[in-house]
Image 1 (tube, rainbow, N blue to C red):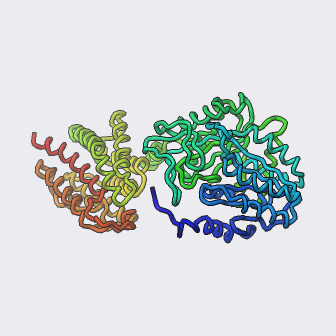
Image 2: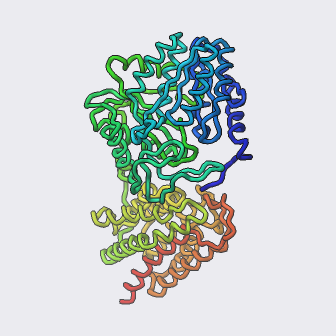
Length: 587
């Protein structure tokens, strides 16, 4: 497990609360109670729990939501004495009634319940609402409380802001509570500072229905793609032991909650798949709330909450959820779900660019290759495709030392498209200008990143030079000039120089070797072998270079003796080409 950016375990909760309060001027901190500076409404809505779920509940304090919250230690209910002091403080600030809204966990029920009984002894008008929205586990004390709590406290806070009395607020919240279900999915356990990990998962496993304190769920299974995992989760939520009573054409609100460790990219995918899954079930998603709202420290997982919007309450509930609040963690805008027709799918960028590129090329190059040479190019491209596929893992490993470990995958994507073009006879193998133009477009659209841009620039410049060249009796002259133009184009745009540890460190020496053979009518078998040797030496020499471009230039490593992956890719491409032509010229 990773380390933590904390000072001391014993002070981490207090430090965190202090940071949040100092960053938000509408809040103040009293002990471990966060209280709004706004005028307290007649009914003060209070919530709280153990820490480790941030931004819950500190992020939901403010006008239009909670009047205050109280935090315990990590995953530990706040002591009843702290809760009682907060109740007294809210009474002192003008609250006529106090409504406690908590998660259904034993510690919370006991401590908030004890504080409530002590308050009642002082004739304080106080009540408590327990949220138990877990669709997966239902033990002796009932289902656990999960992210559905956030919808309940928002509705309660909005009603309190409207001036409703506690009885009216409780009545609405009880109806909402009965239409709520939440289920969680995780690809990891958690280990909070100073605590043991409750359950562990291998990299290819996930847990369905776990709690927000790291408690295990109802099922451990192999990690599934997002779409399948969400279908499994909704299946449990809608048809399981605590099924939410929804049927075709019902209206629902969807809350997608990041449990702390999912990237925003993953959250977007989860959101997309969840909306589409509900639509496939013929449910109408009227609102979507998404974000990191009630976490489980750093758990790599998410929870899905459904609120059934009954006909008699739908408009009221949506208006309450949409009403403004100054609480910093509540989404500022909750949009109605957009129809799928609002998503525009573009045609393939390669074919789009090919279309416009073809329009720009008015005259084709006069440089044409005879059929036997075109066939050798066909064989060479097949060999390149095979070589790139075979070396994908090695290229990725080389790139992983300094970069993001995807160079092999990027070249493999280009190889896949070249293979498709060869199978569909889309490559003009006898017209070098057209061939290099197409290879450049493939590099741009399929590879991406720095390598894709460099290859795209190189091939585009080569194609342009060949297009404008006047054929001479020596074909190597045309290719030599074109390759030199490609190098100059890359150096101009990428500001890459020889020795910067990039693919140019292999490309430049090989182009120089080709230039040295300008006056020959063609390469001999020995020339092709020497070309491969030059490329190999140049690639392996990059081990001794210090990266000055790309991500690698920002990375420090003890072991710098690593071949540049782009340089190695150029070498194996040239090796594959050289092998084909060397064999052919010996016949």
